[in-house]
Image (cartoon, rainbow, N blue to C red):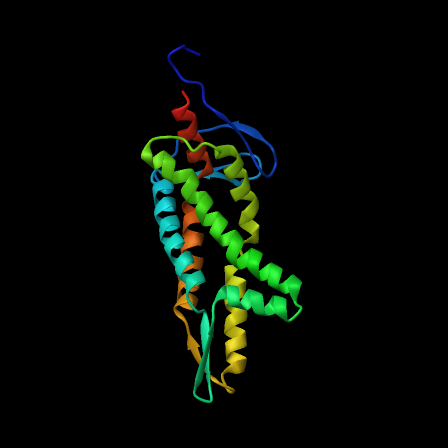
Length: 207
């Protein structure tokens, strides 16, 4: 191979471990494994910028969702409201510590950590420098992905409100609508998050 021609990078399939050479893709193109047909990577030229934009918007909704009441009940002329942390505390007081811990981890800690991790990984690159603990935060983000279950929590709230509707008037709080938007924004941020492009940008900073 001539010295002035860069050697193609190798990539291993995450499904069958077949090692093959990376090929340039057109805008929106998809690279598939030659052995099993699994998707290896996509062409997302602006994927990291979009992921950062969605993550920053999700961060705003996350703060609102945790600071304001999720739902309120009007019974006998009195309005009773609670926040997400109030729900966790009530479950803990009612001796449902395991449920309280699961709600706290899957609906408060994990979504917040995922949004913060995406911002930590992409914002410094956008500003022109590499994040300090890039490998550790990247691995943490990949491990947290299966544990974000805000949509399950929202489904549980909807079912509970449907059962309470005949007892008291249900008043959805601003946090509930924020949680709904948070679900879509986190999904959009992760869909546009391109680990291959991220590693390429970090590698270019250290050349």
